[in-house]
Length: 310
Ligand SMILES: [Zn+2]
Ligand SMILES: [Zn+2]
Image (cartoon, rainbow, N blue to C red; front, top):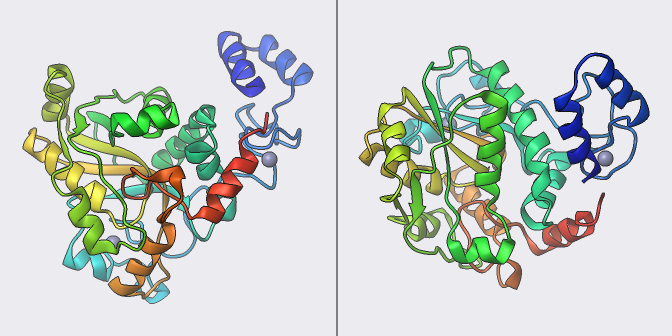
């Protein structure tokens, strides 16, 4: 909360005013509240322990952001994308959910710890990642968050992808078009694999009929960017891309906080294991969910631990 107020006040002043605020109220880590945030340009978001990454480690597929064998560096796409690329042109992520523990803490606190305000620093970091990694950004971009089912929204109190989309809109200057709706809730079976997950979200998204302006923005944009928190199997992205194409979208890309990816060289079977691993099973915390919307019970406990950070 303190960082939220600090940022709001800081944005309204300049020069000496900012220097004074930085002196009197040095930036704190958004996640844990410790005062070790590096001052930098005043927008530092985390302490040393909670520094946000500026990309996933290792060699990554330019399309799905999944890990690739080092020998494939420079390749156009990974083996999995050669078979099927989610129906998107590229996915830009802040990091790897499994391999970067500090990012996982942020994502869990944001998704399961009630820390909606973390959308701001997370979006700022993701926007920096977009600027650094996308060589030619289309002039006319539109951000479309993956919709949350109203029941889930009621349970959580906020829609994390919509919050993230709204903050990305500020950080990147791209308009937000809430053109997608969830037409039915999707239910996770505890050990659902990629195939079941895909069947689970099939046809679960449609056009927001009462938002003609948003639909028009999608049809007229040069590139539509789907916004999600964690991408696992890509089934949600695939269904959203399909719905956006039906609305007339020409190019579809995606932005997400993290890619939950199996190890390099893994097979589809290994990805199935990951799906099962990141599903909440019978943890009542997450009965209705979407692809990548859940964490294992142990992670949910971690999120609760982070819930009360200032
Ligand atoms: Zn911290
Ligand atoms: Zn790929």
